[in-house]
Image 1 (cartoon, rainbow, N blue to C red):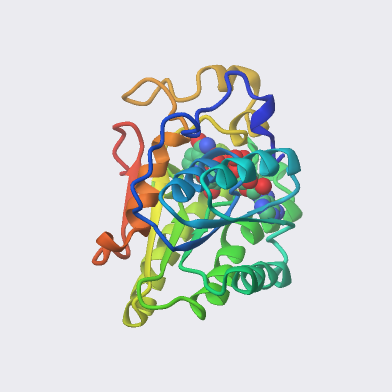
Image 2: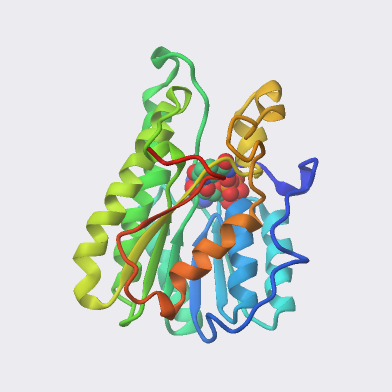
Length: 270
Ligand code: NAD
């Protein structure tokens, strides 16, 4: 963990062949954590095709990141690759500074990176594992949002990736699900705090999505039935999440803030 989409079978669909842009984010600059693979890669491709320059942060999956970079450059947009560990507050501040240095601005922050591991008993969860899950999934969101909000002008947008686990915790993902509850709560609070500055804050809550996180954290028999219990009877492809992130980022959504958009294939959040 984190895994690589290049080794997944079947290969996920990030919209490489399907997303058609229409200038919805023309001239914007976006920073996407976890932008190399999975949902973050689909968002990076959609944002670039909609006219944004894109910076992507990821832990160390350089092959995935290089591939995503080439998709962004193909659209005629610029791409900045930012490897490193966002559990380090200094790294979070440094990557926001690097984006501002490179592009002179940051309009959109997508806090999307996360860590999860499955444990069936509380005794199996070490203190280190608990703290690392919080450091990556929620503390980094605070450091990055604080650093980016300073540079966001009226019209800025922060989009956080929550989960169906925000409201319906899987007990096997105790640490992860607890952080996802916090992500949704953080979003609702920060939206109120930044509303006066013209910065909108929202979250997307995915249901099951076919990304490296899944084979990386679940046993093979769980992977084979992943998403089957949802009303649509299947997991989403990453591209099916991208439209929510584009909608939340675009200027036409100027009154949407503090919201959770559920992309759960028909399963109610509560
Ligand atoms: P993914 O494996 O493609 O993405 C996870 C990303 O997090 C990777 O890009 C990885 O580099 C990054 N990351 C992990 N630890 C990091 C660290 N210490 N420093 C920097 N980056 C780090 O998986 P994904 O499913 O696309 O995950 C994206 C988001 O979607 C996550 O927030 C996840 O919780 C959420 N989500 C996924 C599902 C699903 O079924 N896949 C469901 C609900 C929510």
